[in-house]
Image (cartoon, rainbow, N blue to C red):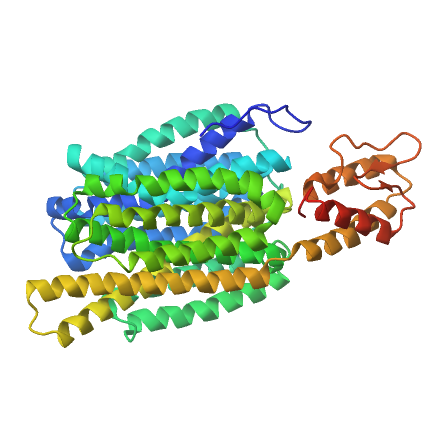
Length: 560
C-alpha cells in the first residue's frame, strides 16, 4: 500500500510516512489479536486442559482490561506524552504476549491475556494520537487515515489467516509469540522516528473520573460477555449492565465538573465526532456477524481448515484496502461524511442480507460476493469515521479523542458478541425443537438458520447506523454556515496583530481544508488573505466570508 511522496510543509515531519508505517504496524498487532487467539483456543484447550465453561475467559480477560482502561490510556497519553505511552504499550504488550505463549496453566494464560489488555489500552489511543498530530495537511491526512482505517477494518480477517497458518504449521503458542516480533520492529522504529513532547505538562489526574469511567466500562463489557453463557435473565448479566449505567452517568456528571477531565465532553458532543463514534460502534458490532458466524459456516458446513478459512477472507481484505484509499482521497473530500458513511452502512446491510441466502450445498463462490461487498462497506465507513472523529481536536486532547475511537470499537464488539450470539443460539434451539427429532440433518439446518438470523440482525444494526449517521453528521450547507460564522470572528478579533492573524490563518487552513489558497500569508502592511472568490481582510464582513466559503463548496473545491 504505497503512498506517494509529497513536499514537506513547515511543521511537518519529513519522516511522517515512516511514522504512519510504524503506527499502522502497532495498530495491526492490537486489532488482529482479537481473532488470532480465537483460532488458537481449541489447541490451547487441549494442551492446558481447561474445560469449555472456562474457555471464554481467555477472550473475556483481554476484553475487560482493554475496554475498561482505554479512557485512562488516552488521558495518560495527553499527560505524559504520546511517544512515551506508545513505547510503554508496545513493550508491555510484547512482554504479556511472551508470558501467554509460555503459559503452563490456564490461570497463567488468562493473566497474560489481561495484561495484554492493560497495555493494549495504553497503546491504541497513543497510536491514533500520534497519527492525528503527525498529519495536518488535508490531502495527506486522507491518505494516512485511509491506511489506518483499512487496518482497523481488516485486522480481524488478517488475524484469522495468520492464526490459522501458525496453528497448523507451528503451535498455538506462536499466535502469541508473533506479537513479540511485531512489537520489536515497532519499538525500534518508534525510538528512531517519534519526537519527544506531545504532552500537556504537569496536570493532576482526575482519579474519581478514572474510577467511575473504568468501573463503568468494566461492568458494561462484563455484563455483555455473560449474556450468552449465563443468559440475559442471570444476575451476572443484568446486574453489571445496570451498574454500568449508573457508573457511566456518574462519570459524565464528574466530567462536567472536573478541572482536568479524563474525557472532555466537548469531544463527544460535537455532532460530527459523535456521528463518527456511532459509526465505529455500529461497524464493530455488525462486523462480528461475519467474523464469527461466517467462520463457523466455512469450517463446520463447508469443511474448511483454519488456514483455508483465513485465506477465504483475503478478498475482503483486498476490497477494504482498495476502497479505503478511493473513499478517503476522492469521495470524502467531494461528498463529505454525511453521504459516504451512511452509504457504507447500507452496503454493509446489503452484504449481510446476501449472506442469508447461503445454503448447506453452497460453495465458496457463493460466499465471495458477500465478502467483497462487505469489504467495500468497511472501506467506506472506517477510514472516514476515524478521520472525522479526530479532526479539529486540540493536540492536548488527541489522546482522549483517540481513546473514544477505540472504546467505541471495543464496546461495539462486546454488544455484537452478546446480542448476535444470543439471537443465534435462540434461533437454533427453537428450530431444533420445531423439527424434532434432532437428527444430524436437522441440527445442520438449525445451525444454518442461526447463522441467517445473526446476519439479518447485523443487517438491521447497519441500517440503524445508517439512519443515525445521516441524522447526526452535518450537511455541507450546515458546515459552510458554521465555518462562515466562525472565521470572521477569529480574524476581526486579531486585526491589530499580523502575527496573530498568521496563526489564525494556519488554524483556518487546517480546519477549513482547501478553502484558502495554500500560499496565503498575511502581507506586511494590509493583513489580507486570498480566497477562491474574494479577499478577506480585517474589515471584511461576515456575509462576505460566508458567501466565499459557500461558493467554494458549491464549486466542489472543498468540504468543511
